[in-house]
Image (cartoon, rainbow, N blue to C red):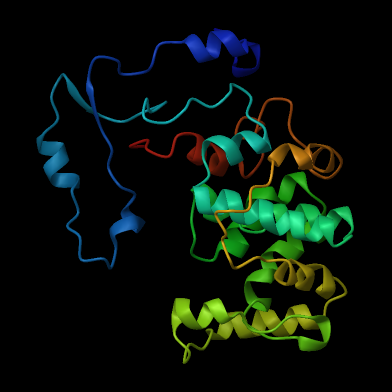
Length: 253
């Protein structure tokens, strides 16, 4: 059987869709409905299984098919929410235009990558794990700790508490203890400013009238992100399953 890396791009894109001719049911991930009051649809969907009605597995025809060996920008274009796509590109562009070192630009480009098509909760930690095998230790560290730093002003460094957070969470919101501990750890660390610069260039406007071409970062990605030959999700790394989850986000199992 041909491996993923042996399938040509044209063969991959023209391959038949899995489960063709049947209705594909998409069960929301359990974490998506917890605490929302929405009923869990799993039992009803199990009852509705039939030869022509199955649970979704593999490529979803409602999503554009990913390349056989997907690269970082393929996820930006084909899997990220529109807001995450714009936000990450705007943040990286702000760092680039501000004359920041490439490590800061790549960190800004990746800092909320988990928000794009995976999980929002503890996104700094998830994002750092997602990119850990492919970036420097410093960049991964900075991405993880930006989650805590964004809650604490450092006006001498050029960062004040975001006005947006008062709208998002309420003016009386206080971050939990683990975030306060992480902030203290980061402030004492040699890479503090690397992470702080992410928050400084973290654009909260989410402007839809500011368009940044992702190709502008191709060379910076090439120098600062080790893209596996097999494609993200298929290189056997400890985080490959996380990239595959973004490739096939609707899989039942």
